[in-house]
Length: 298
Image (cartoon, rainbow, N blue to C red):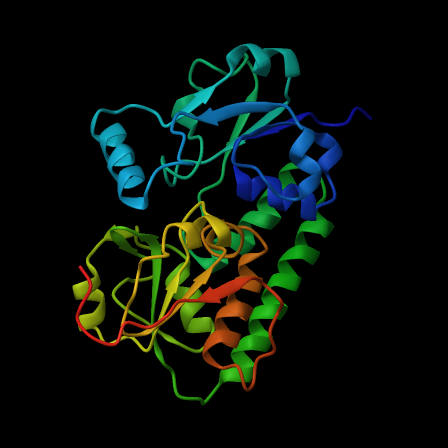
C-alpha cells in the first residue's frame, strides 16, 4: 500500500504527526514547523512574509495589524514546490490567520484535486479530539486514541494534585507589547493547573490590553507565553519589562499557543509554577523576571 504524502502547513499538525509516528509520510512543511528536530530537513512550502528576528514585540504587532487591515496574507506559499511534492493531503487551519497558513492562502497554491484538511480547535477538549480526528484521517485511529489518552491522563493527574488548594490569580499573556489576554484553550490550562484565569475567557480570541488593566485585576502570577516565540526569543523581548508581580517567561510556542499534545505538559508546568509543593517540575524551560517594586508600567 502506497504511503500517503502529507504537506503540513500547521505546526500543531506536524507535532501530532510526529506523535503518531508518521513523519516519513510528511513531504513538506511550513517555516513555522520546528518540532521535532527531525523535520528540519523537510522541504519548506510556506514562509512568513515578516522577518521578526530584529523587530520588537510592538513592531511585530503593528506589522501584523497592518497586514490584517489591508487583507494581506502573512504567508507566502510556494505553488511550484507544492506541485512537485504531489501531496495527497494538505493540512491547514482557519482559526487564526496570524498563527499559521490558512485555507485561504491555498486557493491558488494547491494542485487540483488535493484534499485540504483544516484543523480548528478552540478548547482543550477540541485539541484532544483533533488528535483523534487527524489520526482517523491518516488511518491510525488506535495511535490517536493512545496519544489523546496520554494527554488526558497528564491533566487528570494535575487536577487531582491541586484539588482543594487555594487558587492563585494568573494572567497569561500571549504577547508582551502590547500585552494580549490569552484565548481559546489557555484559560482552561490555567484552571486545570489550579489557578484562576484573569481577564480572558475559554474559547474566545486573544485580545490586546494594557499592563494597567492587567494589574488592576490583582494577579498573583503573570506568565508570559508569547505566541510563536520560544523561551530565548521571549526573553530577548522582555529584558526591560519589570512588573510588581511575580512574572515568569515560558516557551509559549512549544507548550501553550500550539494546540498539540505538548499543551498537556504546559499544564503540568503551570501547575508546578503555582503549586510547586505538590506538582513536580516537568523539566520545561522557564525564567523569572526581576520585580519592579515601585510604579506602574505602561
